[in-house]
Image 1 (cartoon, rainbow, N blue to C red):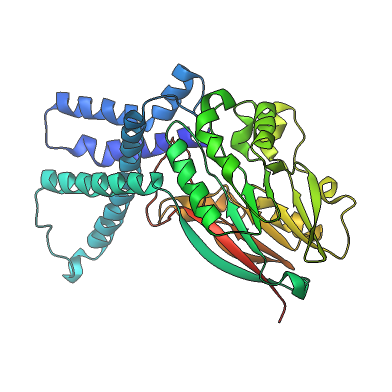
Image 2: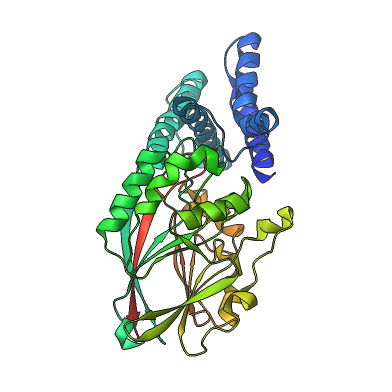
Length: 378
């Protein structure tokens, strides 16, 4: 998997540029190297020991420590890389007299760098697990009837109810959403990690969600990892209408509004129907505004060509860590967070209301509940 390859590269870089250069005895270096290897490969170890990575059934303190250690490693790698770029520039310009000698010994500099990674990582873990704030935004849709001007949508993406993000956090999200008194509540996938039996209490508050015209959702990749069929039934019991390569025609203020949703491409690994925008829109009114729920933003150009007016997506988590988020964008056709214009279609990519417990950290990329107000063309 990509995360294992990425972690291996980080391990090698930190080992060579930090651990092996420590001014300590060989035995201590060896111990530090083994610890570094375990931290970097924790997801691979978890995968082989527990059989899965998506929902590790461990106590919350253990999950937080694992997340903090991995986040520390990522930040340490970024700091070392920045330091090495600085040292390279210093070497190239040494003869110009621009650079003074470093004020600390090598050992002290290594300790300072490590501390500079550990502290922000702890803060980032805290930011990752607290309840998301509401992000207010709006967009104009050229075909939106004046009667639907001001229609409010609340998008919840990547909630990731899990052993780390449990019932109390779900209830906080539900309370914040209901306080907005939305017209529609829309889930754009990755709502859960783990089986319905494991998460039954943690997802129960979702049944209390209230919207004037209903609560709808589409599937994300994580729904497939733990009994997809059972989750679809559970969501229905919780009052969510799941749009799986299908659509609903809503009558709102005397106007028709098409709300569609597609499945996730990971479905192919489970021999289940993949995303099909043509099937999702088959038979939909031609002149009505079309809103699509698609967990991943990568198919935006295809969806725009199919006549979608507004696409709501998630999946990227906004990159989670400022400075590394552009790497995430490269794996999602350049889409990362916020508003995009794709042909005649508007696309909103949410930073997500939660995160996967394998990397529970956010730095400079807060979670969100998106309240989107639709405006007709001026």
